[in-house]
Every structure is written in structure tokens, then in C-alpha cells.
Image (cartoon, rainbow, N blue to C red):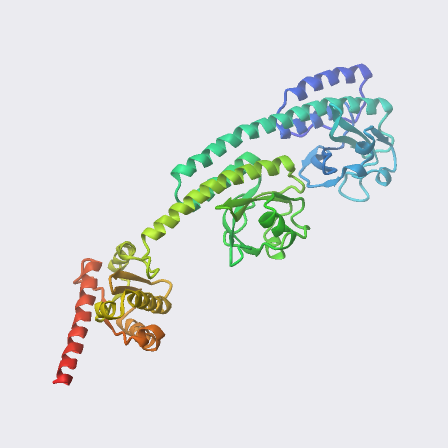
Length: 506
């Protein structure tokens, strides 16, 4: 929509009031906030000189007035300006104001780009609806003595119409938001039964916050660390999304409110608030934010946040909406985590804590594809010699101590990219990726040294046989082939050891 032409002449009183009636019809038929602000400017400039013009909305509960529309010489500009409402004479006295000279000495906001070229006179009026101050509007001129009492009366009439229109617009926006909220809650609700991946659930939560609250960014922080006070961004979205993986310590007043009191929090200015750690502040845009705790299984598992480019953009109603979304998200996240934990249990050996044979098979399916593309992979098979004898002579409790002790050795010596699993009974398998036989033998040597020095395994004289095999594309079709080759190598070692013991006894 093009900016309104600035009117420099004066109209007759009859013409002005006729336009005022037209203004009422125009404003009451406009529901979009941005369109409404432009319409108020346009209608005002059609009957009053308005080289400078702004609209502010007032939050009486916090005593904060925020500039939501600003135009200078017909050019609309985006500004993020807030001020204490009680500092404004117009808002404090609920009466219009006319200044025809020395505007800078008495006004909170003087328009113009330079000190030598600023507005000289202004008329301002409060927007009051049903006894409540909605905000204020101001028309300004670069000339001295521009406005009359009639002009002030006309602006007051426009302000009264604007107050009704803005209140209607805000109520319409709230109704639209309330309409979207159950829709998004229903979407999160569907995630309770359909989405089993925690990351997918978090993505739906972010989408819901961005849509319902119409904000510029949202993120989910998950609590980690021994005390649960380390926050890490697990998912984020929006135009001002924070980087996933960013961490910070949830301490001080912020941690107390979110983690202990479990209450939502509003931060009016992210750039200056002492609640925001410097490590996070450097990633933030100027603006405001709020957060609500995610409570899973009775504990605070994380924080759901929303951010806006505008300072002081959130109120208690917004925080209540975020808290309701957080409550829905908590249930969905708990369900997804439960499924994830059950899935992990189904792939984990309960005695040793290592991946079980099923998990090994899933891993090997991926590794065989990589091996066929040329990646070097070595399989090492371990078998505890005469393990049944330990159970029979020393009891199963001792056997149950030996297996976890050996599993811990394998896990300690294993690289993060590799997998070590309990294959079954007293057999274990290590899958060494991007490794040749020389590297695998060094790994086996380290394991052997650890076995000799382990207090549990050394106490009972436990010996372990090991077999190695490398995957060869020319002769092997599957990982089963390489496991079989490692088994054969291990049994060959066992046979040699048995032969040596027999020769020594003879």
C-alpha cells in the first residue's frame, strides 16, 4: 500500500467532520493490525498536516507504551521504541496535547533525521475505549504554529475512532490466535499417539509456537548435566532461530523461576536483561522473549521459548498460551522418550549394558553397505575360555561379575565410531570401522593387557580367545561371512593353545 500524501493545507470544519464520518467507516471495517495502522495514518493525513506521525499502544499493567507505527514525510519506517507510559503527559493525564513551538523541550518523541531538521509542532491524543487507554496518536509538523484547537479536537475524534478500531483488531487477532491454538494443540495431541521420535515431536512443538503466538523464533532447551541445570538447544525454528546445540547454565533468578518455581518468565529486553547469560546474548537479536518449563515425569526436562524482534512484545496472556503449549508438548515428549527408552532397552543387553545381538545385526547391515563401497572393516570375535566352569565351580554370581567386567574393558578400549556388542552367552563382537588388520591387532593387544590387569578377571584367572577377520569384497557377500571368518580364526587360536597345553603336559 503506498504511503498517504501529506496534507499541508487546511480544510473547512464541515469537510473535516464529514471526513471523520468516512474515517469511522474505514477504520471499523479494517481488522488487520498493519492495514489498520496505515489506514489511521492515511485518514489523519487527509485532513491534518502530518509530516510526522506515529501510533503507540499502551500496556497499562506494565506501564509500557510501544511505538507500533511510525511515518516521517510520507515514508513508513519500522522502529522498536518503547517508553514508560506514565512519562507521557497524554497517557498520564488522558488528555490531548497541542504544542506549536519548542516541541523538543516538552515531547518524549520528536520526529526527524537530524537535530537541525526536526518537527517543531505537534498534536497528540490518547486513544481511549471503554475507559481504558489503548494508546496514543500524534501528528507532527516541521513548521512552527501549524495546529489549532480545531485540529486538536479533530485528532481527538480520530483517536476515539482509532481506539475502537484497534480494540476490535486486537480482539479479532486474539480470536484468531485462540482458534489456531486448539488446532495446534490437536496437532501436538496427534503426536502423542503417532510421533515416536522425540526430534519429530520437538519440530511440531516449534511449529505450534510460531503459528499460535505469531513470533519470530522459538526453541526447545533440554536440561542436561548432573543437576539438570545445563540447558542445550535441541530444536529451534523461525526467522531468528538460535543455533541447535548451544548450551548455557540455567542459574540465578532465571533458573530459580524456571527450574524450581516452574513458572513462565517474560524478558522484555534480551539485549540488556541480566537474566540472559553473555554466551547466549551474543546469538540474540534485539527484542524480547519468554520461556515456559517442560515437565516430564515430574521433573523439569527443558524449556520452551518464544522470541520476538520487538522489545516488550509479550504479556501475561502470551505467557499463559506458551505454558499451555508447553504442557501439551511435555506429554508428547514424555511419550516419545518412553518409546525411545523402550526401544533402547530392546537393543541393549541388560547384564552388560552393551548393544545386544539385534542391535549388532542392525549396525552390520549399514556397515556391509559401506564395506562394499570400499571402507575397511575388521571384525573381532571374543570368547571367554571355559566360562561354564566358572559358573559351575564358583557360582553364577561370579559369572555375572566377569561378564560386565569384560564388557567394560571392551567399551573403554573402543572408539566412538565403532560398535562392541554381546553376541550371546560368553561371546562378544567388536566392529572396527575404517581399520586395517594392523590397527585391529593393536586394539586386541590393549584389550589383552587390560584383562591381565583387571582385578575381577585377574583374580579368577580368566582367559579370552580372540579371532580377527577383515571384510573382503571379492570373497565375502555379507557380514555373516566375515563373522564366520573371525570365528574360524578364534577357534584356530583355541586349538593351538589346547595343543600347546597338551604337549606341555606330555
